[in-house]
Image (cartoon, rainbow, N blue to C red; front, side, top):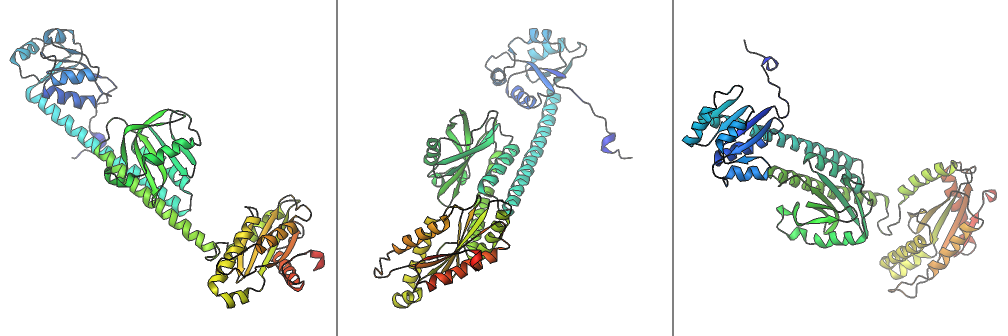
Length: 468
């Protein structure tokens, strides 16, 4: 009857349970040493012995701080561990070992037995390494999947990179990892380190990164996915060095750099994982840029780059709901209409008409605050929302309108210097109590615009709710 796996006998060992003396410092001893070094959670190598003090395994043992000796007899006499492994092939050494072979509690492995032991352990660790590499790949794939899911929620590049650096760090068992996002003169930083990480790095460090990786795509560096740094990069403020870099570009602009420090030399599997991670991140950031571009196009007017009517309606609803929650809040709406715009189009052509619209929007944008909303309502009509959380100081909306009037009057189109540009502006302002709905506010501004035109255009007319 076939036994189930759990019915097989097992031996559980604690760290350092098996003490080993390796006799023979040639290639066989070196092979055993390299294998057993991977088993140091179970095996403790007491000493390596060889008549030649410069034998390969003896030199390797010194590097590992493992005791060595050239005296076989004294080493065996002093050894009170568990196993003696004889890989010498010298009859004189074998004879010495045979004298001690009958000592209780000590096993002697030699000849074909030693070769068999080496083969078994070698195969075990090869399989174990394969499984570990596959686990690393699965961990990285999980991380990449999470990054893709974050892309679906339209996160910023910083959100995606923060998630990525943690996933890559975990998958590669990195000792430390940092990520830097470069935006003009700013250098945002985050990552995994045993010390605190400043939120921003000095501008000089951002310049250093730009200079170091400016021609990265032209270098022969693992097909431009990552680079092994020589010399290593020293990060200021934290004074840590990193030897692996993953620069990320948006077209030809460096937007981020991921730095990592791994244990020892980078293996072939780790290089593959770095390549997979870098490729996925580049594609993700490219897709994010595409999403952001499409999103911007969906809410902006193509000609003037102001917001479009659909975005304005959404913003109006949000602002009305917000102002209603503020006891002293007020919301102003400005309606703009270009005076005599049709004759400009008819006389000078649509190209000049387009330049006029673009210039008008530019002047209005400069006069408004960065949290105000300007949108193209249709044709040559534009509308703006101006929120005042603590109430609009008396006459301020009108003063803003007057400032816009004067600014637009100064517009000159190089291709049509004779064109004089003016606008009529209708203005309405309601407080939180009066704001029944947003369309009422827009309707009042539209009525005010009509009265501004009747007054002769090129003016601002403010309509209070009492006038309605």
